Image (cartoon, rainbow, N blue to C red; front, top):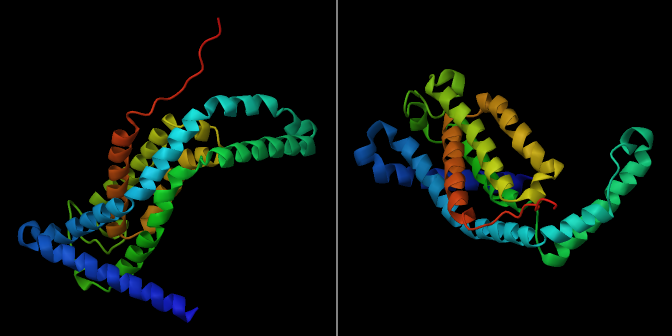
Length: 249
């Protein structure tokens, strides 16, 4: 346990060194906004490093598009009667399980992952946590007074940082929703999965509530990475065709 704590502390310290390097690189022209710009630069570097995961995500999504006809066949073959939820829950669960097992077998056969869109987000979790600890433990005291547009402190919680922090919270929730919607629009199969619907509607609301207890610097990181994701998906998905059902004659 102590080893994990030490590794975590070392990672946070290393992140602080990187952040200070970015700050020093732009301090000459960014002035009071240098720390905020350093966080934005950190975000961009992390997203560039994660590009291989993003490419894997897009390839998986394209694979999902190719097997759409087979997915529909399985859904018809292992059709679930939702009316059984009330009349015969056990039979309903059995039907759901057979359908899910058939789907998972199909995904495995074609080497696709309907939840692949979550990979870049999960890979960033250590950075989010480390930045959170970096701001909360006062390892870089200058962040306490670092300013951004209508924000008085990057290390403070939103309620103590000025009204500009509330704009960040709204942007974080809105961009989180939009990027999930953007993904689901190009991946109808995942859009039908309950987990994806939770990500679409529940996650932005949950983040909006939780964000009032997150340092402003982390919110800047989050909004920046969401903006990067939206732009990246626009570029990478523009040649991905969504197969829709043809109207019956």
